[in-house]
Length: 370
Image (cartoon, rainbow, N blue to C red; front, side, top):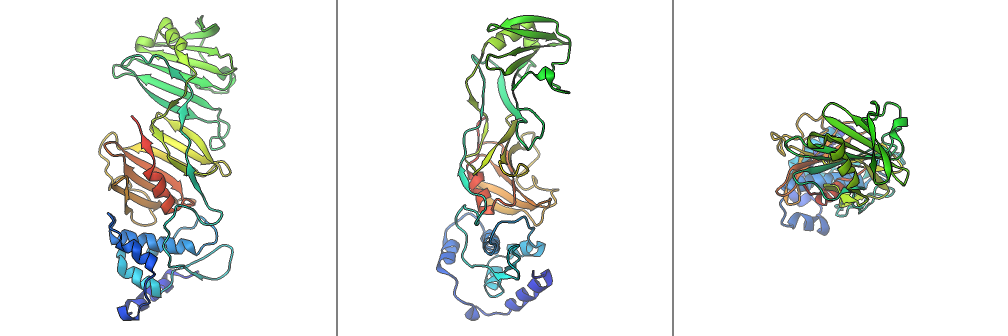
């Protein structure tokens, strides 16, 4: 592997090369430079260097690029010219010795051999609906557990219908009887204060200070719970909600349009974050989150304080300014901050095995419906 000093020496040697001494640039790369684009030349240069280095690998790996290499990417087209004469050298885990990177720019969203492949994502839904939805209440949806990323946690769905004046109820769906779970924390540990009928089933009633919960077994063997507060804190009000529940899936607010093949829903929380996890490596996580709704954050400040490998790179997503950074970790990972047109900002977190081109393609197709 070439050291930073060796790379410095190669770039320094290239600095004295005249234009007439340089070989001609490939036509396909010149086509990329000549396209009218919103991105500055420095971004084109950065993408080219990263794509060239990645092209020399025979398989994707979790390796942090040289800090100096990332810093030099911002130098723009002059560095690109030097890069053609001083080859970009990367290590490969499968073959000894350095290899010269291919000068052909990457234009697709496919990963290298054995890498991640993107496919159309399936719509993410919450399995239940309330019909009708009481006027003045807005729902948010959550899903926890049930996948290897959350070991030992059962799959739980929860919808929170709330109003600005404090009236609120929650609808939860459990895979089995939550009373048998150790330390369940689902408001099923208190004393039963009565029972009430819900669509032919007998629901346990637990009355608390300003709230009430109903818990019953569904015909399919799963269990449901309604927790009511404020105007829904009485048994009859909670019972009316329970009897309005229907098995009709409804979409959650955040959605992926593209997703890695072989990845599944890991969970979502309060309609403000959505996770996808790899079926073969449960620690591989792709997370989409809403940020900045409380104010104070901007595209330029959202990544401040991160232990980034290099400076955040300006990119364009959905026709708007965005920022992309590689963050130190074990292994390193991507963080991209973008914004929905006429909506909030979003944060996309992805493993480094997702290429920069793929991450930008994923970001272009995320959606948010309030």
